[in-house]
Length: 238
Image (cartoon, rainbow, N blue to C red; front, side):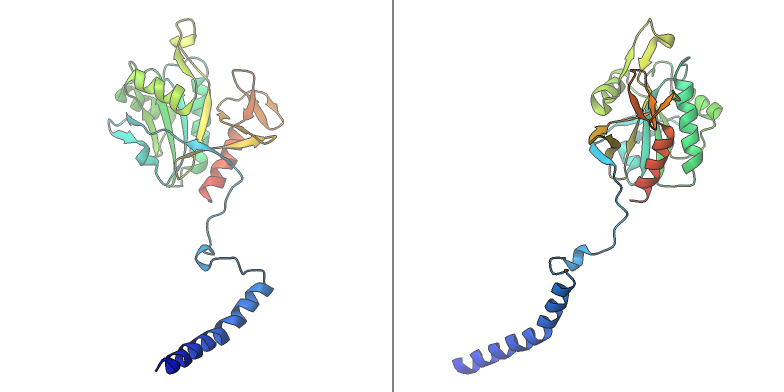
C-alpha cells in the first residue's frame, strides 16, 4: 500500500512539474520571476512629490453652519489656507489665487479647498458665507471654516506648522505666513523638493518669480500658485 501511495504522489509531482516548469522558464527569460501576480494590478500614476506626513485631524464649522472634519476630504486632493475675512493685506491675494485654483479644478469632484479663519470672533459662519459669496466661491467642496480660537491656532501652528498669530501692530490685528498646504487623497501633506530637500508649502502670494519660485513673507522662495496647480493635477491622477 505504501509503495502505491509513493507512486501516486510521485506521479502528481511529475505532472505538476511538466505543467509549471515551462512557465517558470518563460518568466525567467522575461526577468519576471520575482513579480507577484497580485501586485501587477495597474495602479494610478505615482507622482514625484515628497510625502511630508499625515495632515492633522480637525473638526470645524463651515459657512453653512455644518460641522466639517478631515473626513469630508477623504478621497479628495485639497488645499488648506489660514486667513481672515477682514484682512487688509495678503488675504485678498491668497483668496484670489485660491479662486483661480477653484476655476481650474471646479469640475473635479475629488478636489476641495479648506479656508480656515484665524479670526473666529468676527468670522462667524454667517460672515464667512457672505465672504464666500462676495469672493465667488461656488465649489461644494470649498469650505470656509471657523471654530474655537485656541483650537484653530493649535491646528495652524502645531498641526500644519503654518504660522498664524495675533499682533495688534500688524494690519488687521493678525499675522500669518500666506502659505498653502497640499493634501493628497489619503490625508498626506505633499510637496516639491529642491536639492533633495522638501519645500514644505506653497506660496499663496504673487511675489517676484525666481527659478520658478515665489518669495514668501520671510524672504524664502517657494513654489507658487502655478506650481501648485501642476501638483494638484499630479495628485488627482495618482
